[in-house]
Image (cartoon, rainbow, N blue to C red; front, side):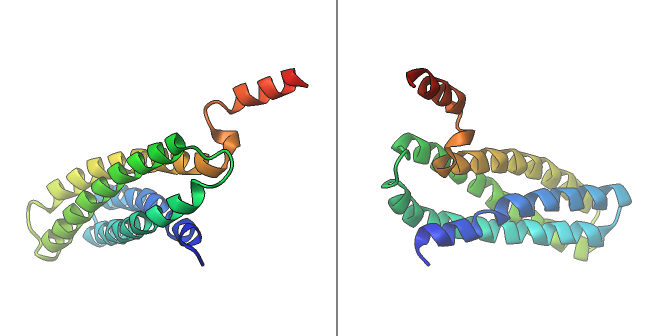
Length: 159
């Protein structure tokens, strides 16, 4: 298994885990259930760990991908920039989640405030996750690139 393969194995969980975590957190807030919120917090922490693993394997994947046809430095750079932003937000979300877990275990009055703060940060993480996933997909899936229709139309015109 090379770095590109390993990157492909781990890079989906930070995005999917954050989406599921957000849904679970919303459920916990609506139900006013600390246990459900704790599940979301743990999922956010796991997502951050997988985010770290994705960042760790990303450089090796870049070395392999930059030699592939139709993969430009610009495409890789856009993905890398988005991934760095996502990773930073995931690390912050994990920190907030650890505080939320601690406050829930202590039945602290500020635990609800932390849940709402985690909700806002998780929304940002989901947005950045979508952007990161799209830019990552564009590395190999030329059909989802912004200029895909333009390229297809010009190729048809040339024939």
